[in-house]
Image (cartoon, rainbow, N blue to C red; front, side, top):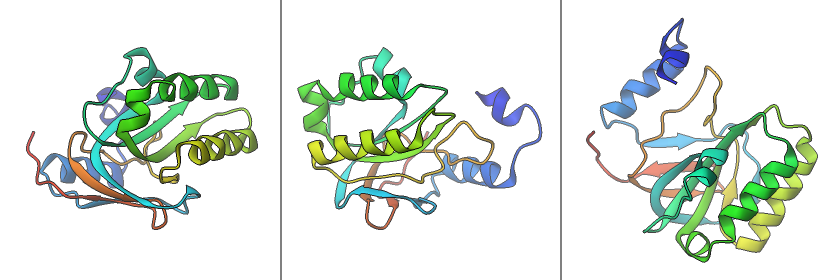
Length: 166
């Protein structure tokens, strides 16, 4: 991944954001014209990543989390199946307090994707919104995994509460 992001010409936003996050200076992550699937706010530790990868490692948080998700090149039926797999675990259901969605690139049916996310959000009754630059594209956010944060689906913002060191 580092070679993909830094092995050739790097986008200025991505570079600035990467080093800002590494220095512990990131204070918030904002969505761009995000859709709110379920309103509300949540607090927890930032955790997540690629949906397919999380399912492969049997992701089970041991504390309350704000889950961020992204993926690419997955058909809708697999996204639905992976979300079902993830949230059929009672510990995951109990610990995930909000979901910030990044980009799901090259999906085969955006309308169906929106329906699936809406159904999960309604079922889980936790804040869910999208539009975050959590992606495999060149312009992206670097997420400080493991820090305490507040998430507002209504405002489309994740506020970092911790000072963190790597």
